[in-house]
Image (cartoon, rainbow, N blue to C red):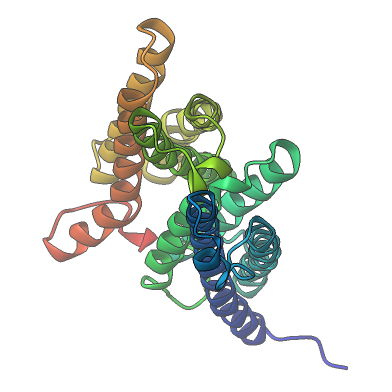
Length: 318
């Protein structure tokens, strides 16, 4: 039996990535259905409690807490399958290009989505954070969609870029991105939950989520882990790699500038929490702004650099 060719590895990687996108989208829809059923079941209970049980009985088999739990289990199983497919796509992409799959925006998004999903699945098993399903999957689908829109065939890197330091640099950033995705999902859900708590509307769907304080703490932990990884990747190993590749540590390249902006925002987030005691809504909004600068650095900066003629040493990463 003949071994697989590099082209075949690339084709199977593409199939796995496409399948992962479909499976994760279905998981997202299933979790949305879970949220709807949880909300609907509470509405039916309220109607029954008001003395109109006959009206509540119609369709109650489809709108029960047990139905929501079953949908949650199906959605999580599909998420695990999607995680395996994304991870397989990244591995096959590496085999197709005969290097670590971290050389361009497509590969970064593929590997970053895999890391984010692995972090989420592990956190579900360890800490029961399955209530993060919808925002996590929404962000992962966004990242995958952005990365697929920048798809390029597998191939070797420019020799000057294919160094030991590059892989340390990009791997650190990808792991940081994975935790930032979880942190952003928790921040968004915190705003949703906290607003409902203030209005005294915590029944139904919202009763499936923990108290907003716990959600806020999950966001803080995720960003707290991601920040030192981002610092190590962008401000330590990145300049070292740039020195070996281009002969300078820092040149105020657009990509470097926006990586620094992201670092400043997240540093401000952590500083405000630790020293000024900022928690809750203000911290959540800063966390989301930080994630927005990260997405801008990852996707928009590369596109703008090529479309409006900005000179960037990172145009290879498209």
